[in-house]
Length: 187
Image (cartoon, rainbow, N blue to C red; front, top):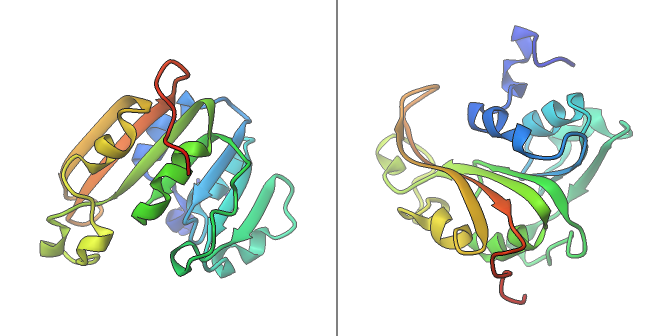
């Protein structure tokens, strides 16, 4: 499957991800957290990354089972299952359209030295445009900066209203794990 095929538009990576992924080591190890149908996992595979695609429902990734370079992990993080990647680190971590605050430190711990975090999801104010509306699933202003800015080097940050592909309020962050900054608190 190629993302250049217009019929596969659902598998195109977000522009935020495609713009910043080059900051990560080419061909490194990547985590696509809350992978869904795997639009980012597929894109990373095409670029030579070794990918872990994690989601509660991995049925959208079924066609990738057995494909070299990808590991599919089913995990119910919100149902109390412990972080399944506790001893693993990644050169690139992508989180798109997902927020579960209790695992933010786990995400940080999953970053290899020099690793890149690319995070984007909905923020407060999105309720005026559609789903999600629940505050548990909407970032507060500056929340990604608060969660990662003291322990990672922030490279890019945005928060505001977007109009394409449909109106939404989003918050986005790109950050690099820098050994000079203090580590995440213990789990």
